[in-house]
Length: 208
Image (cartoon, rainbow, N blue to C red; front, top):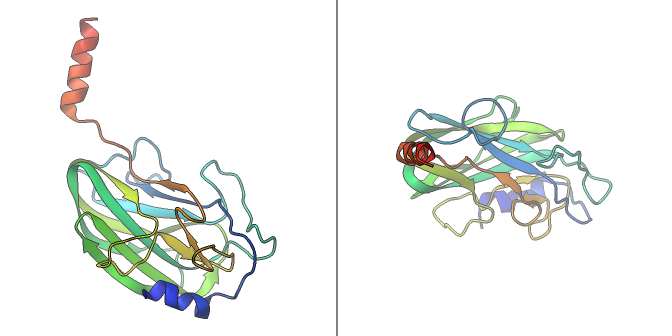
């Protein structure tokens, strides 16, 4: 079994209760700290930032753990991304976010075809809130997209899922709050618009 799931019983206090379906994980490719339609990948993109808000949903609403007791803190995380669409992404490296104080590598940065994953574990839990987990260094050709993978079926990547360890309960994976199981708010990069399509659209507008 992969390291993240094995360590949950050690680093997480047992928390009894239903999961919170409320977190938000997203990518930012233009460096403004948010996810919008401007976050399309192009050949000029070299860094993709990964953010997780442990106690807000995508609308910005404050959320609490549904057991009513335990915090939506963070003691480890795994991230898996997948490239799709026109073009390709070469994953060069992953750098831990500056705010992830005390976190150390758990599941090494691994690339398998269009997928890349990585995981870190903290010596202590960080308080609920918004964190930049880190940055993927990439090289882009064409106009692909990056999306998150919830539970992974790729045995080549040590990280089992896009998820974070918390005192707040998970469901299938206790104290491992998992995208696609415990929450649904995940935003990848935007779809790019090829130059040819944009130009043809303008020509059609001129003649209608």
